[in-house]
Image 1 (cartoon, each protein chain N blue to C red):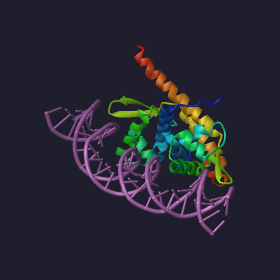
Image 2 (image 1 turned 120 degrees about the horizontal axis):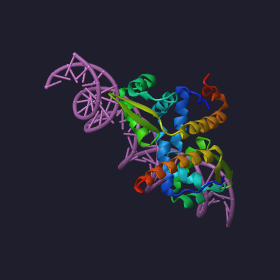
Image 3 (image 1 turned 180 degrees about the vertical axis):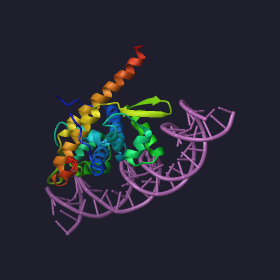
Image 4 (image 1 turned 90 degrees about the vertical axis):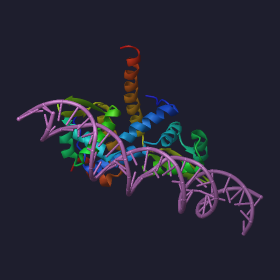
Length: 110
Length: 110
DNA sequence: TAGTTATATGCGCATATACGCATACAGTTG
DNA sequence: CAACTGTATGCGTATATGCGCATATAACTA
């Protein structure tokens, strides 16, 4: 497929999407959600962050349409809302793995 | 497909890679290099940035192994050094397109 | 209604980084 | 050697944003 040359405005949007993915805590949240939807309390435990910080990052991810939000009584459940995330991480990991073969074992999950 | 769960250290590296791609000016540089390698002066013209700023961003991209550097006399030529960039942008663009298409439908009374 | 639980948010601080300016460095030419 | 060209870099500033603390909001329960 031929690469389409994007406009400057499109590049701004792409950059913003990449920025959302450029925070380790948000990636940890996405990782925690790979297995399916979870409520905030569970995500706080899994990521080891504070409740306030986790809530903020969940907001950022939801605003970017990477997560979907479901309210159930007192709890709020989040789940991955954009399956392209999986392929994105696959691509980046593959590239990084090739890049420093010395650190490659990190990406193979031991 | 079964996603591999990455370690926290791996996620930090992935986040760093995304951060490199999270700047519009760096994406403009990558876009300018889609057609092949170019020297700094040409990239300054194509992107409309200052020479100092362009040089810095080229450094960042090269450090991340996304570009390769070739010196020829006074000039320095840069070229895309990681083909996964193409697929990355394709993925993100596809995702953003869907998102905006969905948004557009709202205004069409869908 | 009052109290409890789960989640979200206002605020301030600290840090990271993009940018512009000036200048340094490297390589070529006189 | 000096002068010139192309590229890189030190420095200061402005802005963005991640984090912690405290508190607010929402929904359930006695």
